[in-house]
Image (cartoon, rainbow, N blue to C red; front, side):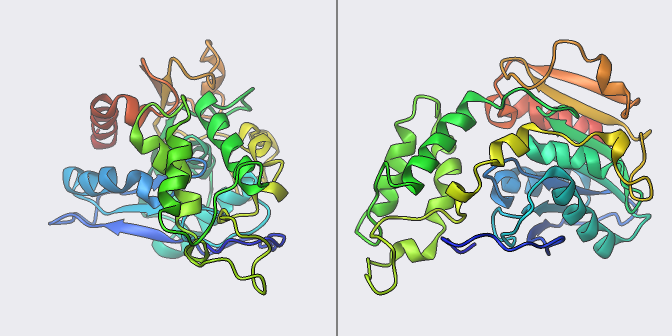
Length: 307
C-alpha cells in the first residue's frame, strides 16, 4: 500500500491480494483453507502456519489480505459487512458457490470468517474464530491499544521519526520494542510493519514533494478515527440482507478463547444462536493465541479441520 495524506476512496468491493500454499500432492476433493489476519496484520501473519497446514491437511491454503491491509487496496468503508463482501466475492469468483471452504480467522479476521460462513454465495463447511465472538465487544486487547496509540503519535508527529536516514527502520522498531505490551520481538515487528513497508519512507525529505521529513504509515490513520470502534462493533446478523446471508449455519464452528483476553463474555450461551454447531476451546493466553500457545493452537486447528 502507498502512504497517503488524502482521504481514502470509496469502493464497495476491492480485489483482495493473497498468498497461496500448495501441498505436495493436493486432494482436490478436500476443502480449501482460507486464513484471515487481524487488525494491522497481513498474509505474513499466517505464512508459516499456512505453509504447514497445506502439507498436513493435504489441501490448498489461501492467506488473504483484507482491504486496508498488506497488498490489498485501501478504501472506505471498512466495516465488517464490507470486509465480508470482499472475502465472499473473492471466494465465489475463484471457487464458485459449491466448493467446500474452511476459514480460519484471527480477531477481526475471525469476525469476517463468521459472517462469511453465513453467506449464501459460498460453501463454508468449517470456521475457526480465534479470540473473536460473534457479538459487539466492549474493548480490544491492551496490546493492540498500546501499539495503536504509538502509531497515531507517529502519524500526528507527537513522536517524530525522520524518513530516509540511515537506520530509520531500526528507529521505528526501537519505539515499538520499548512498549511494555510487546512482550516478544514478533509483536513489535507486527505493529511496526505499516511504517516499514512504505517505500517512500526510504526517500530523503524533499520539500517540493513531502509535507514534512517524517515517516508515514501506509494508511491515513489520523483520518480513520473510528477504526477501533468499527473493530469493536458487530453487525446484527438478523438484520443482514436475507438474500445474501442465512440466519444460522449448521457448519461446525470452533471459537478459540484467550482467558486473559477481554473479548469473550464468561457465558457462552449466545454463541449458539447463529452457530448452533459450535465448540469453545479455552487457552490460558492473551488475545494473540497463536503466539502465546503455538503448539496447542496448531494442534487444535488441525484436529478440528481434519474431522
